Length: 161
Image (tube, rainbow, N blue to C red; front, side, top):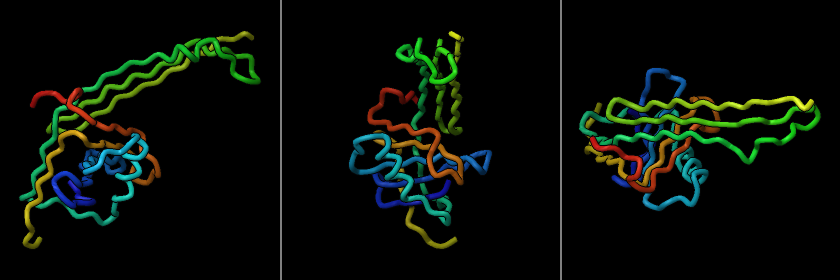
């Protein structure tokens, strides 16, 4: 775990180190609630530092169990014509399967579209308890924008430890 920013137990930005060095799992907690997930993302990303230190052995991170599964069909898009090529959008869907627990975070996502023709030093331990509200962001290390942003404003998706 790297600590990118720590001001207090309810104001921090950390990165969980995963199996692949190109992916970043970033967790952030702020004392004031963002108005949108975009604002949560911007507030989090501005605290990332290339030289962020690793957490100290005395630091404590408490992570909730999260299970989120969602399947969405975008029926409002069905039947629309794709400009210039005579295709008609028949179906558009997306599924997200996200879990996070003490072992790490896993994200499986899938989208589909079908078309038809119409044609070392002394450190004071830091306490970091990740209870709502908090943000979770996943991004490629060198990408300017994340590929997954979640803002947990309440405990609806948090499982029991």
